[in-house]
Image (tube, rainbow, N blue to C red):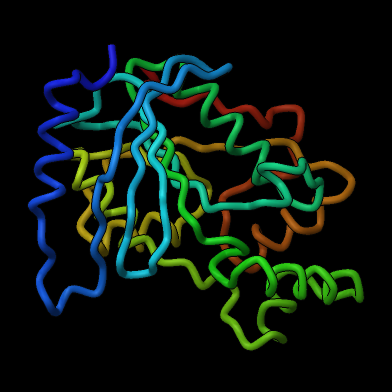
Length: 235
């Protein structure tokens, strides 16, 4: 059972009337919500528009999440090369599929799909970073040589999206402590973490080791036989 049609109309009407304060750095509007049967289970998709970054973002929703506590939520940043093309240079597609499969078996959950390609540096700069990685730099060094921080993402829009869906608290599906801190700094109440660890391949092993060593990701790459961590309390 997903979000009822009556509540969908309420959310859309509420969003249409919503006006962020003039001094607000971030604003998000829910534009449409529709059913979305998938190979991972029955979902609904909510289309969001943010005048702040002038991008469209999405929430893939399984079950009724409105007004609920402890909703499992995966924040997934867009990765065209991985998500759509199946690149082996990163674990993005594997994490997305793992999250959708696990949430599809739960009572309720959300995958927020954020348009923050290349950890926030954009598609063109991401490919420039790949060129530098081909020359021997790791993923962090490549971003820094292009004049960026190791991770340029911000989760204010994600926090606003969850607020628009009236989600009261979440169990975040992530291996990234910085993501948890940033989301909490934007007012999201996080009551637990669900690891999403996928096995490395021969092409992304060093990338994942760099995320662990330099970005603080909670990965245990030395125990690949035990990579699929069961989500405690999954419903």
